[in-house]
Length: 294
Image (tube, rainbow, N blue to C red; front, side, top):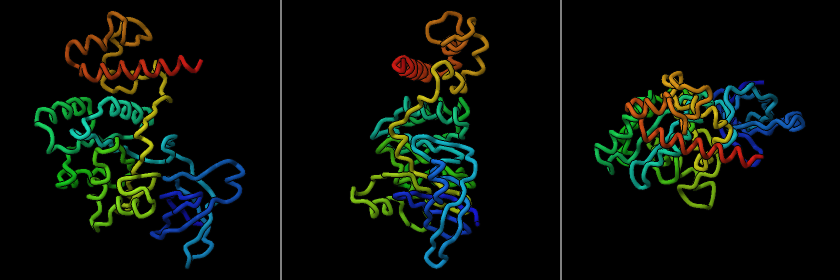
C-alpha cells in the first residue's frame, strides 16, 4: 500500500494523488460496511490495481485533523475568505459568520478584499483596519489586473486552503491567476458540466505547487454555523476575549445586561461597533434556531 491525498470525488470514484501520480480509486467494501466514506482532503492508503491505467482501491482513511460538514471535506489548514468591495457590496455579516466558524474549527483564516479598483481608499481602509486590528491577515487584490496575487501565493505555501466567498466576488478569477501555466480552474469546471462557466458544483483540490493545494468550496455560499451554541459565540469573536472578564454577570450575553465589559469596550471604541452589531445579529439567529429545535 502507499499513501495518497484525495483531491476530488466524482460519483463515488475518488481521485487520489500519490507519489506525484494520479489514481482513480474506489473505496474498499469494508469502508462502506463501516459507513465510512472518503472525503476530499483525506489522507488515505491505497492499493494499486493497475499501474498503467492508474486504478486503485482505498484501503484505509487516516484520522482527520479537521472535518467540515458543509461542504464535506477534511484536513484543510486555512480558509481564504474572498470579499468583494463592490459588485456585489461586501457582505460583512457573512464574513463574520465565517470567521467565527473558522475560530470554532481552529482553522487559520485569511481575508481577501477583492475589486479594490472599484472602491475608495476610505472604504478599503475602514474594512481593512477593523479586521487587522483584531489580528486577521488582510490581503488587497484586484484579480483582473493580478494585483495582490503574489501575496496570496505566499500564504498558500505548504497549506491545504479552502477558497470561498459569495457568488460574484471574483473567486474564479483569483483562482485562475494562481496558475502559472494558464490552465484555468474555470475552464476545467465548465468542460466537465453543461451549466456553463463560473459554475462550481463540488469540492476539488487544485495543486499550486508541492504540498500546496486550494479548494473552491461552493457550499460556503449558504454558510451554516449552527454547530456553534449561542452562549459560546463570544468565544469566537477573538477581540472580545480581553473584555469578557469585565462583565459583572456570569453568563453575560453582552446584549441586554448592564455593566457588560463588551458593551463598555464598544463605547470606548476598543471594539468595532459594526462588528458588535453583527455579533448581536448572529447571536439572535442562533438563539432563534435553538428555540425552534424544541
